[in-house]
Structures are given as structure tokens and as C-alpha cells.
Image (cartoon, rainbow, N blue to C red; front, side, top):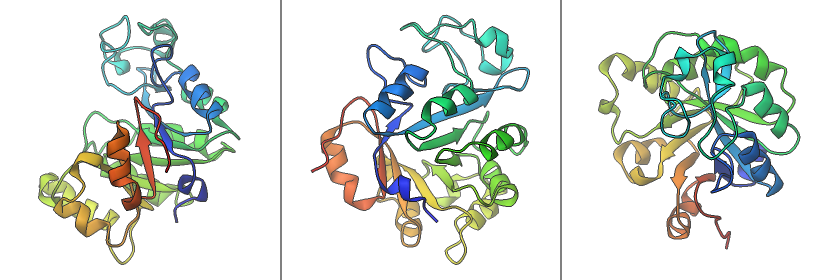
Length: 243
């Protein structure tokens, strides 16, 4: 079942970031909560198995380092600085900022879209289990989504996707994806889809029976074109006018 909070306020992609606040920082999350937006954020593990909030697998795009997140310990990650200023937060720090203020769409990052190894899931499960705020978990990796369906059925779940057809998934993954998206008894609460792929064969089939969220909407024109087709929108680089 889709949680009620996800049917309400729009979702700020990696927080409400701008020229002052970098994406996926505590400052961007506070800014989003102050403006009454929900938040999408990304979590991955450090070398010593600690969950931190950062999108890219490699640090070079936004920070003064150019290694992989998983090559650094948490103490080393704490020393990394965004080029705009600020630092990479832990998952716990990010949740603390949001608790009681906004809902979180937590994307679980893996090395690929079909990484079958289960590691981060077991780390973040107890953290989320004890969290008292609103959240959902989602991932491009169907193995991650299935793990949460089996081990944390009380968590709302979404499958991220940017494929236009089922056969774009590796053959070894297709049965699992079909299980997650089963029309009779889906194991996810919503479909989380690339806005530029709306109208594809996979979109048309899946949204007959599953509600959808789209990402990442980056203009008012795009927002106006899709808002009536989905239960919510993940936006970035502009402030949608809800007409």
C-alpha cells in the first residue's frame, strides 16, 4: 500500500539543493523540510560497512576526492569536502534531520542494477526499523527490493526503472522482476520510473495496475505534462508551481 505521505508533498531530488547547498547534504535536506517537501536521498556503504548518503559511486563530480566511496572508511569520508562546502552525512544524521518533518524516499545504491550480493540491506535494516519518521525503500536492483519484501514486509517499497521493455533486463533477472511486478500480487507498492520513458511498453503495462512516481522532473513544462499520470513527482533545479 502506498503510504499517505507519498500522496502529498512533492519530492525534492537529493534534497532541495542549489548554488549554496550541495545535493544529499544535511543543509539540502533541512532546506527541503523547511519548504515542506519530501526528500529523495541515496545510501551506500563505506569500506568499513557504514551507510553514508551520497549518489555517485565515485566522489569526483562533487568533491575534492576522486576515489570510490567504498574505498574509504567512514573516518576518511568525514574528511571529504564538497566543492560547494559541506560534507557527506551518514544515514543516521540524515534521518535525524528529517524525522517528524518530511517523508524520505531512500534509494539503496549498488555497484550495478543487478548486484545479487546482499550487504547494505542488512546494515540499514535495523536503522530503518528503529526510525520513527516516514520512509520508503527503493532500488534499481531487484535483488535489493526482493530482500526487503522478504525480510521487511512492513516497509513500503518501490522498484526504480529506466528500461523501456522487460527484455532490457539481463535474462537472469527477468523472472525476479516479473515477480516484483506481478499484476495479481506485486511485491512493490509503486513503480519508480524515468520521466523520459513514459509511454514505453513497460510503462504502459505496469501502470495498468501499479501507481507510479517519476524522476527527475526538471522544468515546469515537464511537470505539467506528467503530474496527472502519477501519484508524485521527484523534481530538481526548479520549484514546481502546483496549478
